[in-house]
Image 1 (spheres, helix red, strand yellow):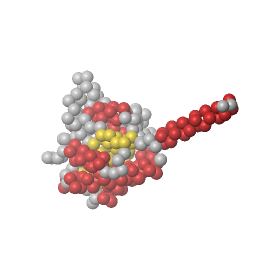
Image 2: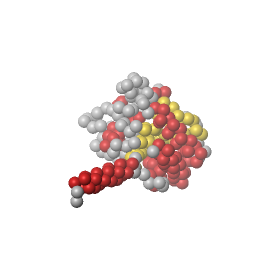
Image 3: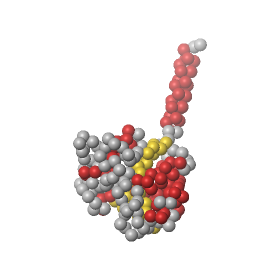
Image 4: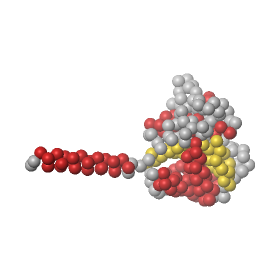
Amino acid sequence: MKRTQLVLLLFIFCLNQSYQSNSADAKKKPVIVWQPSHQTNTGVDFSEAATCNAIVEAAIETKPHLKEYKVWSFGETGVHHANVGSNTSVAETSAIVDGKISGYAFEIEAANKLQPQVLIAVHNNGGTKRNAVWGYIHYGDSYEAANRLLAARLIKAIAAATDLENRGVLLDSTTGRNDYKCAATGKLSFYSLDEHVNKAPYRVLLEIGDNAVSRALLTDPAKQKIIGAAIKKELAAWLGELN
């Protein structure tokens, strides 16, 4: 075989290998992380952890099956505030207590190791006197606009599948809750949505229903599945457009 022919064959082989590698990379599924509330101290005779986990499990079970993971500190013994705690409190998120990290820190550390493209936190609201759904996003980072669009689509899908009123997308800096602040803006924020903590580019927190007004809806297993499915289907549609 002539040298020129050998060089040509090697070139074609390398080109083919490069194409196959690029095709495989293009087909990689984005990593999705779900973060259900681990709170058991919200509402009277009501477990937000149970309702939110049921919604997340329903979402994960709904087709299409993505590369999905759940991060949840519920029942963990090596962390503080494993089953309780506010996403907006320093003492219950970023603080180290007796050498232990918080439940929220445990969840976000686990999420970051997975290198997700999307993290969706699922919570229930309380004291609103509204049978509604809200979306929250982080204020001030480069993905704010994109996260607003994603959150808006998800809460619209939930509202369409239930009798929940769509109360729109809000910035975490507007809640006026507790004392956790973003290092970049100095404004109050949700620990789970802070870009300095959560490395996923797309980060939204859903407040689904009110633990008093929406109790019947939130504790109904059939409705939990409907909500989870609605979130998953809209997320999949959004991902399809994103890629």
